[in-house]
Length: 205
Ligand SMILES: C[S@@+](CC[C@H](N)C(=O)[O-])C[C@H]1O[C@@H](n2cnc3c(N)ncnc32)[C@H](O)[C@@H]1O
Image 1: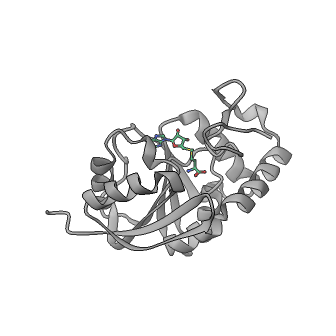
Image 2: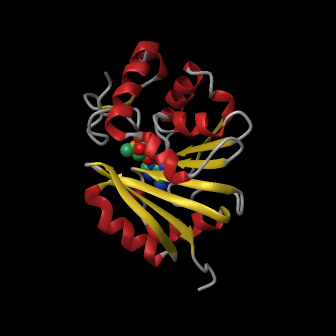
């Protein structure tokens, strides 16, 4: 089992706590991947995130800061066979783990991996039915500017969903409000994490 001090439990970001280094794909067996996924699914209930995104076959969704793909795999399953997931991260090494995870369940054909800069979403305007930020917005140097930019990538009626640890809630909500996002609903499907669903407000303001 690979454990990360940031992810607290499972290596969602693909880092080895003991060494502080990204875990190379050669270090992870198929059994490790399956065990890690099972534990993550129990702890984080990613089906609730999929539900919040309101995606289905054919949807186009972006997974920001996808890490080793523990949630991406659920998004890929939801949009397959003809939808697309764009999985971004600032760290190309963790996206190698993501590719390995997706291959192990036959879903790699549904996902485009994309290494992005820390300051920008790196998404095309007006293209996405939904954008997911799971355990990532607290890393942004300027979360308000980042979220404003991400809102432009949504199709009309698209949703931006943020899930993070409860202790980031106030900071996340304040940034989203300043960015002009409109909160539709929120929930706490597990005691450690919230899920907030936003739509883009008037971006001309
Ligand atoms: C704690 S992990 C979360 C992984 C996954 N989203 C999850 O919830 O299981 C955070 C990930 O975000 C990435 N990250 C940090 N800053 C980022 C940024 N500005 N843009 C995209 N990814 C970023 C990190 O490299 C890391 O893989």
